[in-house]
Amino acid sequence: KAGVTQTPRYLIKTRGQQVTLSCSPISGHRSVSWYQQTPGQGLQFLFEYFSETQRNKGNFPGRFSGRQFSNSRSEMNVSTLELGDSALYLCASSLRQGGNEQFFGPGTRLTVL
Amino acid sequence: AQKITQTQPGMFVQEKEAVTLDCTYDTSDPSYGLFWYKQPSSGEMIFLIYQGSYDQQNATEGRYSLNFQKARKSANLVISASQLGDSAMYFCAMSPASGGSYIPTFGRGTSLIVHP
Image (tube, rainbow over all chains, first blue to last red):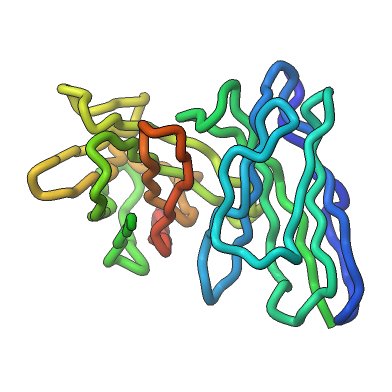
């Protein structure tokens, strides 16, 4: 069974631009969660989608948004990029909402110049 | 509010020896789950072990065991017979297990280096 895939793996953007990251969960998994990891703030939960609906949301500004499609694939969008958005963005999937065992993808390394 | 504290920024262990990574937590939720993840230098987070707050026995998964002491609010990870491939960052995390709100909180991590 294929693991969680994330595209692109690396991304360089400039301040003010927007970016869309993609995550394909493990087949059969309906929950997708997104995380931001930075040296300063550590690993922080962004949001979770289950059955195309956002179920949980972390403490991030509205510039961070996401969606989930009927095939459980998820996208995360960050608008009006700031230097502080440079981070590793991790996606994780699980069978059910708030699943105890999450399977993570390799991450997307975003650099904002 | 939830809080996870990992007080050891770095740990060193000899190959084949056991090592304990510390984790303490604070929460007002009556029911919660505790997790440990491993993050090698490649960046991908790997789920290791889970402990529910109402589980009577400590969780074990192969060489990993979770030493859960509820009264002390600690959930230490024990790795037995360390291997060179165990060198990585280790994160402790928790989340509520009831009420429909699942927002996990992660500790800052412990860097483990296994020496040959």
